Every structure is written in structure tokens, then in C-alpha cells.
Length: 83
Image (cartoon, rainbow, N blue to C red; front, side, top):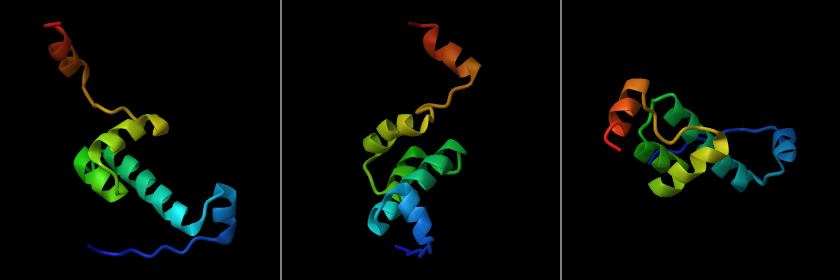
């Protein structure tokens, strides 16, 4: 596993009301969510980046107002026409 070190201004940690450890976890989750939202990572890969199980990652997407599933109108129509 690779390690990435990030320097954050103390003011940022203060504004976020987070300890350095908590900030690291929050930034990993935020990065994972954004990369998933952009389609750069699958939900499984994003969950690994966030350091949480996939089901937890998928549940947390709502906290970031990101859709869990990305379907086009056509895909949604195909999925729901048999219901």
C-alpha cells in the first residue's frame, strides 16, 4: 500500500473542527466519494480508498448528496418497465 502525506494548515483543521487523524479519514472519504461520482472509481475501489466496507460507502453517499446508482433515462426505463 502506498502512503501519501498531506500538509494542512492548522486553520483548516480548526475550521473543520477535526483532529489530524479525523481529518485524514474525512479527506479519504471525500476523495473517494468525488472519484466515484466522476466515474473514476467503482464503488468497491472507492470504498477501499475510503477505508470502509462497500455497503457503508454506498450508504454514506447520501451524506454527500451523491446518487448511489447512476442510470440513464433509458436504463431506468428498461429497469422499471417490468415492475
